[in-house]
Image 1 (spheres, one colour):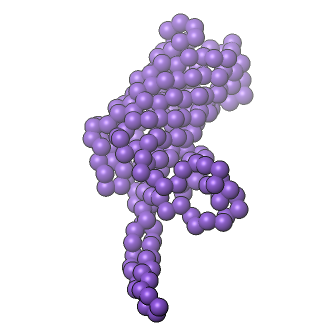
Image 2: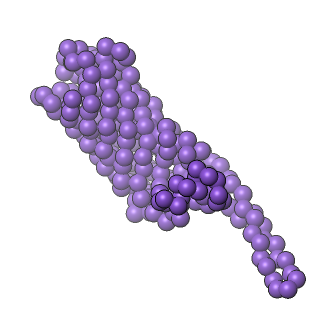
Image 3: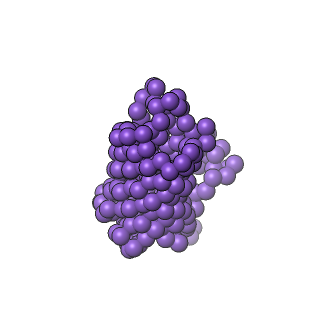
Length: 212
C-alpha cells in the first residue's frame, strides 16, 4: 500500500487554465492548507496546516484532465513530508474563472521512520535482499474542488476545499516467544493492522504560475 500510494499518490489544490488559445501548460502552484481536524491513526494534530508545491500539466486540446505532482511539508513535527499525484477535471466557466473537481492519493513519511532513501535501500528493494520495511504506512485518498481566477498573465489565485480518507497500516507486536538452549533467545512476531478514517474538511489558498 505504501509503495502504491507513493507512486500514484495525488494532491488537492491544483487549478485549471482556462485560456483555450494555449495548447498546453506546465504550471507551478504554491499553496497553504488549513486542517481543522487532522489525524494519522491515533495521533490527532488539530488544528494543523501545511504548505505545498505542485507541478502540473494540462493540454486543453487533448483532454480536460489536469495531472499534477505534489510535495508538502508541515502538518506536525512528527510528519516529515507528504508526496503524491492528482488528476482534476477542468470546467471553464469564463475566460478568467474555472472550477476543477479532482481526485488524488498521497503518502505520508513520518519523522521517526527507519526506512529512508539511500543506495543501500534502493539495492535492497531491487534485489529483495532485506526484510520489508518495518515502518508504519500512512496514505490518503483525497477528494477536492478548486476554483481559480486569472489575475494577469502568468498569475492566478485559487481557493480549494477537500476531504481526505486516511489508510493506516500499523506494525503491531503479536506475541513474543522465548527459546532456550545454550542461552536465552527472545523472538518477536509482528502483524499488520489496517484502518480507515476520515480527516474532516480542509481549506486552502494559493497562487499559480504558468511556466510554459
